[in-house]
Image (cartoon, rainbow, N blue to C red; front, side, top):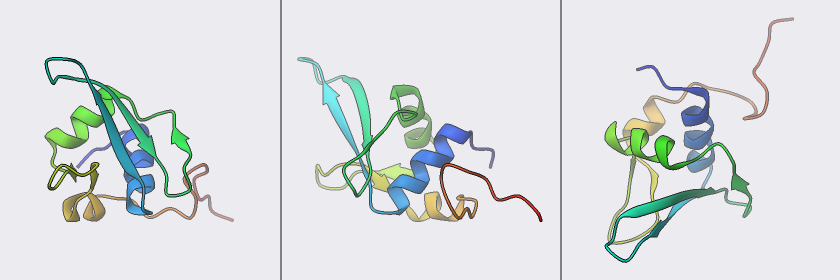
Length: 91
């Protein structure tokens, strides 16, 4: 499955214990999605479009009204990286 860099970084943050918090308007529609790492940092690349695409592919899910977290399918589709900020290059 092809996943963009922003989606990969979001999934990595979620796999390490992060969560996606949603803001809704008066009608219940989602207006903003914010990805928070386990350390409390906000991931800038996670926006509403990234949230919707990950949810559509069922790579993230919410249970019992809790914040969105990575699913087992999301973990399977992650590419292994040592660090989210840099890619690993050959010697």
